[in-house]
Image (cartoon, rainbow, N blue to C red; front, side, top):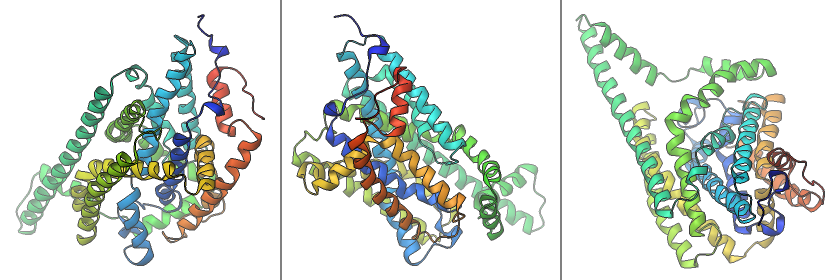
Length: 430
């Protein structure tokens, strides 16, 4: 059989798609917005709700529910699916005789994904963009695609363990800073001269524990209400930090590990919905039993400490473990939902959302940028009110995605991505 040239290669056709993957991708895509909406609509709104005074009533319960069920887990699910997609794409290309062109297609696809991430960050101004990170770590995946399941699982376990070790190290480092700073402060209060190192520890501890002031919050909101270029200037340092230091401190354990899991899960056919009901039920029960217990312990610890900064670091020591198990619980639960066949109309809509994942993800940024930045709602809503926006976007995408795919082969950004990847304009209309 003659190997296909790159220009002869075509993207996956609708008849070849795996429905379970599309449905669960749609769920994960919509679920990501549950967490992202906080950064899109409020300043300094993630780990410490006390900064914005969201420690009571609906605002607190929304934060509590997010920390328990969704913090990092929908992103984890989406990342697992990305890893699975690597195996799906490359195996199909190889089966069709693509040969070395498989690498051409794969790496061109990743390069263009990186470009979409840069557009999402620097043009749509979403500083929490995930596409850039997926592309960055996606560059590492191709050589691992033929590894055995055990090897992929071992790599994932090692990466997650390293993340836990670093989080434990961060907590104990900050605890030591606190102890040395308090000792230096006591000596200083008693009139004893302290050296430069002691002064430095006081400064480090002050930096760690100083909460954002109402003036800083107000300045941030006013800057975001001051036009596109002022917003760009305000967000640029954070975007740069997210795309550099943050990725190498957290991305390896947060993203690359789950991509490896996704590759393993695809090879085990867990994500195809082909395992037994008992398997998915056990996965859900064990995942939630372990993960929710850890997450509840963390949230309870933070709340009871009155959001003490060092306690937040202490709670974060088990973050990667809790996140992993709740994500596995989600996989089990959502696969049970898919296998049951219930709410088939909803499953069809979710599958359409999943098939247009790139377009719908970028639409999250576009819609929220227009609403919060363009129309000036940034910083003006309560935390719980953000979810009126979330549910509106969900309804919009669940309705429009299947309608769009009745007339078009792909979502608009999927069509562009595929055309750029294969170096040839793809058929768009049906």
